Structures are given as structure tokens and as C-alpha cells.
Length: 247
Image 1 (tube, rainbow, N blue to C red):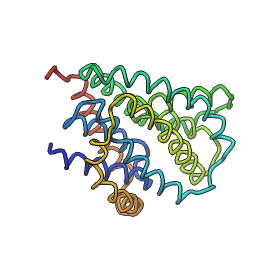
Image 2: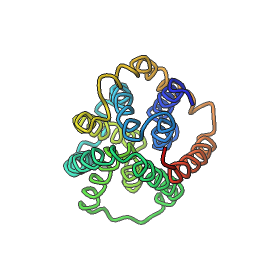
Image 3: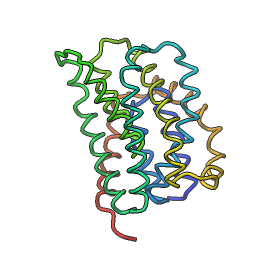
């Protein structure tokens, strides 16, 4: 796949997800797509500017519609998770084959989450503070390591008694903070530098129309069918990553 096409697909998928279509599944597909044209560590790093630009527009849409107390509960452990994930990222970036297989395993976990997420809505749940701490750590760690921190957070939020708007707003706020915290880690790990950044500058203006398209797309297609297509693509991507061979 040509480099520019991979970046374009990544941008579109991020916009669709931030626009409300497919939840965390489209973003989970972004890194596997980029791994086809660059080393795994670089693929993780280069996604971050795209996510951060998308976060700005998502925050504007959902400004102050979040539940601050819920986000505060998760945030301290999310910071710890980001720090630990960033340290592991710096180590794994030097071992491309191993990192690809770890990304494949994370991708499979996203599929398992999506398959089981519908059942979470029917669970009789008694909230505990340590649940939020654990989910905060998992979300920060998985986001820093592989840009797949949303599934544990989304599973947790499905068990909370919140409106859809608060659900999305909480997701937007937490991951805007998490993504900002990831920036020093990817810079220190060397998976994002000025050359990488300038190579995707042309894609950044495509983020706002991609988000708009995602919001419109919700009304044009069956979201369940779209998610099923994404899951099938994720499955093949995860198998390709797990079966990666030395270059």
C-alpha cells in the first residue's frame, strides 16, 4: 500500500470514530494499516498528531458535557499507565517483529471487546472505585503502547448509568488528556520526530471534514453493519501482524 494512501485511510478512520461511527473500532484499525508501510513503533508515533488534532474538534463539540467526577476517578491511574506504556514503547520500538506481534494481540483483544460489549449493557453492576483505577491504568497503558486504550474505558462506561452524550463527552475528555500526555513519551522513544510530523502535515486539514463526514455517515449507513465490516478487517489485520515474518 502506498504511504500516502495509508495516511489518508488513517485520517478517515480517525474522523469516522471521532464523528461517532464505530466507537473505538476504526481507530484500532489505524495502526495495523500504517504498519504495512512503516515500522511498528513509527506507526504508533505518527498516529498521535492525527489523534490530537481530532481531539481539539471533538472537545469543541462536547465541551463541558462530560461528568468531571468520573473522569477524575480514572485520570491519576491513566497517567501512570501512560508512563509505563511509554517506557515499554521505547523498548519495543527497537524490536519491530516482536512489536508487530504484540500489536496483533492487542488488535484481537479489541475484537473480543466488541463481541462482548453488547452483553455488558445487561450486567447487574455494583460500581467500585478500584474498578475506575484499574480501567484508568489499562486505558492509559494500552493507549501509550498501541493506541488502543478506548476498549477498556468504553466497557467501563457501558456499565455506568450515563446518557449517550455524557458517555461520548467523557471519552473525548479523557483521551484528549491521555493523548497529550503521550507526546513526551513518543518523542523520547524516537518514534515521532520532526521529519515524521512534516510528512503528515498535509493530512491534518483533512481531520475536520473527516469528523463531519463521520457524523453524517451515521445517518447514511447501518452502524452495526459498519462495525461488523470493521471487525472483519481487524481480524485479518491481527492475523497478519501475528504472522509477521522477519524482513
